[in-house]
Image (spheres, rainbow, N blue to C red):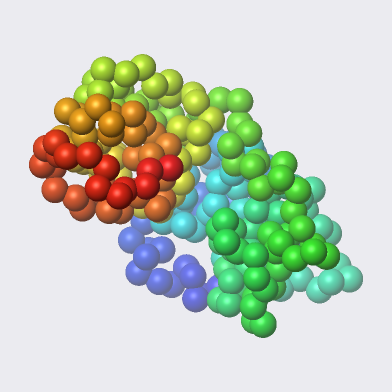
Length: 247
């Protein structure tokens, strides 16, 4: 079952027909909580491409976990399954990383999502004393043993650009690097945006010995920094910290 509130929108219909077909196929094969264990298998089975799956992720119609499992973002709008008929998903670790917002849409928990609101349904990410997620569940996105297969090309291009500009040797399969880049790509930033961030900060910090150490993925691509670095002027900075606190 698919609601017109989702599939009749311009955002949905602006996608290629192959991406829309893939969305329907994923929805038909999801479990009762909207999770799909083998999306890449379905991509091949229905004759779509990984670019179609990337489109669904970037447009936030599905959420992809580093385990390879995905969830249909608007599942709870599409389907209302009676409790006595519903079978809980097997993928409780992934579900623990999600919350259902006021619009009944799955979103990834943010680090400060620790207070329940009156209209929001908890799915496992609430941090109250009675219902706290283990540290292992919180860190699951960074526990992958390999580069995210969906964004491998983009991650490689971004890190190669960073290494060429800084003379460093960052690895494309670093867990932290994969986590930060994948998160920003899921927020619809582009590879060119990453390159601009790199170029801007190299221009500002490249000749500053105190700041050169921060030309690294965990600083440049962190959510709290990325937007400001993207919009900063690529002018050379020769002064010191000026009170900046870098993570």
